[in-house]
Image 1 (cartoon, rainbow, N blue to C red):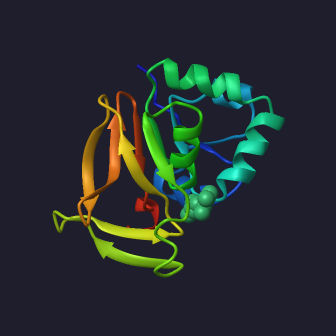
Image 2: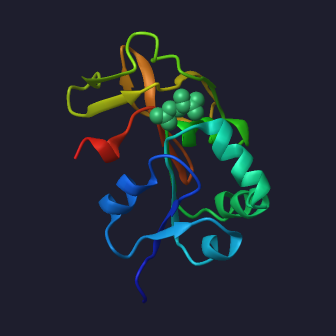
Length: 161
Ligand code: GLN
Protein backbone atom coordinates (compact mmCIF):
# COMPACT_ATOMS: atom_id res chain seq x y z
CA UNK A 1 0.00 0.00 0.00
CA UNK A 2 1.02 3.62 -0.23
CA UNK A 3 2.33 5.50 -3.21
CA UNK A 4 5.90 5.06 -4.33
CA UNK A 5 7.87 8.28 -4.01
CA UNK A 6 10.62 8.81 -6.58
CA UNK A 7 13.56 11.05 -5.73
CA UNK A 8 16.05 12.99 -7.79
CA UNK A 9 19.45 14.02 -6.45
CA UNK A 10 19.20 17.80 -6.84
CA UNK A 11 22.66 19.08 -5.91
CA UNK A 12 23.74 20.20 -9.38
CA UNK A 13 23.11 19.52 -13.05
CA UNK A 14 20.10 18.41 -15.04
CA UNK A 15 17.78 17.34 -12.23
CA UNK A 16 14.82 19.50 -13.35
CA UNK A 17 14.20 17.46 -16.50
CA UNK A 18 14.04 14.27 -14.41
CA UNK A 19 11.61 15.88 -11.95
CA UNK A 20 9.40 16.91 -14.87
CA UNK A 21 9.57 13.43 -16.39
CA UNK A 22 8.69 11.76 -13.07
CA UNK A 23 5.77 14.04 -12.28
CA UNK A 24 4.56 15.84 -9.16
CA UNK A 25 5.14 12.98 -6.72
CA UNK A 26 8.93 13.21 -7.22
CA UNK A 27 11.01 14.84 -4.48
CA UNK A 28 14.26 16.78 -4.72
CA UNK A 29 16.95 15.11 -2.61
CA UNK A 30 19.75 17.20 -1.07
CA UNK A 31 20.10 15.76 2.44
CA UNK A 32 20.17 12.34 4.12
CA UNK A 33 16.76 13.16 5.63
CA UNK A 34 15.26 13.77 2.18
CA UNK A 35 16.89 10.58 0.86
CA UNK A 36 15.18 8.63 3.64
CA UNK A 37 11.78 9.74 2.27
CA UNK A 38 12.15 8.35 -1.26
CA UNK A 39 11.77 4.84 -2.69
CA UNK A 40 13.92 5.31 -5.78
CA UNK A 41 16.60 7.73 -6.85
CA UNK A 42 17.81 9.38 -10.05
CA UNK A 43 21.41 10.57 -10.24
CA UNK A 44 21.27 13.21 -13.00
CA UNK A 45 23.85 14.43 -15.45
CA UNK A 46 25.92 17.52 -14.82
CA UNK A 47 29.48 17.79 -13.56
CA UNK A 48 30.57 14.71 -11.68
CA UNK A 49 33.43 16.58 -9.97
CA UNK A 50 31.07 19.21 -8.56
CA UNK A 51 28.42 16.67 -7.65
CA UNK A 52 30.98 14.52 -5.84
CA UNK A 53 32.19 17.53 -3.82
CA UNK A 54 28.62 18.45 -2.87
CA UNK A 55 27.86 14.84 -1.88
CA UNK A 56 30.90 14.82 0.45
CA UNK A 57 30.19 18.32 1.84
CA UNK A 58 26.55 17.46 2.53
CA UNK A 59 27.47 14.26 4.35
CA UNK A 60 25.42 12.33 1.80
CA UNK A 61 27.97 9.67 0.89
CA UNK A 62 27.15 7.15 3.67
CA UNK A 63 23.41 7.67 3.12
CA UNK A 64 23.79 7.08 -0.62
CA UNK A 65 25.93 3.97 0.03
CA UNK A 66 23.16 2.65 2.25
CA UNK A 67 20.46 3.49 -0.30
CA UNK A 68 22.27 1.59 -3.05
CA UNK A 69 22.90 -1.39 -0.74
CA UNK A 70 19.24 -1.45 0.32
CA UNK A 71 18.26 -2.60 -3.16
CA UNK A 72 16.02 0.37 -3.94
CA UNK A 73 16.06 1.30 -7.64
CA UNK A 74 18.69 3.79 -8.73
CA UNK A 75 18.90 5.27 -12.22
CA UNK A 76 21.99 7.28 -13.19
CA UNK A 77 22.80 9.23 -16.32
CA UNK A 78 26.11 10.61 -17.47
CA UNK A 79 27.73 12.36 -14.49
CA UNK A 80 25.59 10.08 -12.30
CA UNK A 81 27.11 7.07 -14.05
CA UNK A 82 30.60 8.47 -13.39
CA UNK A 83 29.76 8.75 -9.68
CA UNK A 84 28.41 5.17 -9.63
CA UNK A 85 31.72 3.95 -11.04
CA UNK A 86 33.79 6.10 -8.68
CA UNK A 87 31.91 5.06 -5.54
CA UNK A 88 31.72 1.37 -6.42
CA UNK A 89 27.95 1.33 -6.86
CA UNK A 90 28.45 -0.15 -10.34
CA UNK A 91 31.31 -2.41 -11.44
CA UNK A 92 32.34 -0.51 -14.57
CA UNK A 93 35.24 1.67 -15.68
CA UNK A 94 34.32 4.90 -17.41
CA UNK A 95 36.23 7.54 -19.31
CA UNK A 96 34.89 11.06 -18.85
CA UNK A 97 33.97 13.21 -21.84
CA UNK A 98 34.89 10.39 -24.23
CA UNK A 99 32.00 11.13 -26.60
CA UNK A 100 32.63 14.88 -26.31
CA UNK A 101 35.48 15.02 -28.74
CA UNK A 102 33.27 14.39 -31.75
CA UNK A 103 30.87 17.17 -30.82
CA UNK A 104 29.70 18.74 -27.60
CA UNK A 105 26.39 16.99 -28.00
CA UNK A 106 24.72 14.81 -30.58
CA UNK A 107 21.82 12.45 -31.09
CA UNK A 108 21.93 8.94 -32.48
CA UNK A 109 20.05 5.65 -32.43
CA UNK A 110 21.33 2.74 -30.40
CA UNK A 111 22.50 -0.45 -32.15
CA UNK A 112 19.01 -1.96 -31.99
CA UNK A 113 17.61 1.11 -33.75
CA UNK A 114 14.94 1.55 -31.07
CA UNK A 115 16.40 4.02 -28.57
CA UNK A 116 17.07 7.67 -29.28
CA UNK A 117 20.34 8.56 -27.58
CA UNK A 118 21.19 12.12 -26.58
CA UNK A 119 24.88 12.45 -25.75
CA UNK A 120 26.20 15.51 -23.90
CA UNK A 121 29.92 15.28 -23.22
CA UNK A 122 29.12 11.72 -22.34
CA UNK A 123 31.34 9.20 -20.58
CA UNK A 124 32.30 5.98 -22.35
CA UNK A 125 31.95 2.66 -20.53
CA UNK A 126 35.34 1.00 -21.08
CA UNK A 127 34.88 -2.12 -18.96
CA UNK A 128 31.89 -3.92 -17.47
CA UNK A 129 32.30 -6.32 -14.57
CA UNK A 130 30.89 -9.86 -14.57
CA UNK A 131 27.75 -8.85 -12.66
CA UNK A 132 26.87 -6.07 -15.08
CA UNK A 133 24.29 -6.61 -17.81
CA UNK A 134 24.49 -4.55 -21.01
CA UNK A 135 20.97 -3.41 -21.96
CA UNK A 136 21.85 -1.19 -24.93
CA UNK A 137 24.90 -0.40 -26.99
CA UNK A 138 26.05 2.15 -29.54
CA UNK A 139 28.72 1.30 -32.14
CA UNK A 140 29.18 -1.96 -30.23
CA UNK A 141 29.94 -0.23 -26.93
CA UNK A 142 27.69 -0.38 -23.86
CA UNK A 143 25.61 2.76 -23.24
CA UNK A 144 22.95 1.37 -20.86
CA UNK A 145 23.92 -1.10 -18.16
CA UNK A 146 22.41 -2.67 -15.06
CA UNK A 147 23.83 -4.30 -11.97
CA UNK A 148 21.15 -5.45 -9.54
CA UNK A 149 19.15 -2.35 -8.58
CA UNK A 150 21.46 0.16 -10.30
CA UNK A 151 20.78 1.07 -13.94
CA UNK A 152 22.97 3.63 -15.67
CA UNK A 153 23.14 5.32 -19.06
CA UNK A 154 25.82 7.30 -20.87
CA UNK A 155 23.06 9.27 -22.61
CA UNK A 156 20.09 11.36 -21.48
CA UNK A 157 16.72 9.56 -21.78
CA UNK A 158 15.04 12.42 -19.93
CA UNK A 159 15.81 14.70 -22.90
CA UNK A 160 14.52 12.32 -25.58
CA UNK A 161 10.83 12.20 -24.64
N1 GLN B 1 31.24 15.68 -18.66
C1 GLN B 1 30.49 15.52 -17.45
C2 GLN B 1 31.35 14.97 -16.33
O1 GLN B 1 32.44 14.58 -16.56
C3 GLN B 1 29.30 14.63 -17.68
C4 GLN B 1 28.41 15.22 -18.72
C5 GLN B 1 26.96 15.05 -18.43
O2 GLN B 1 26.57 14.68 -17.34
N2 GLN B 1 26.15 15.39 -19.41
O3 GLN B 1 30.92 14.95 -15.22
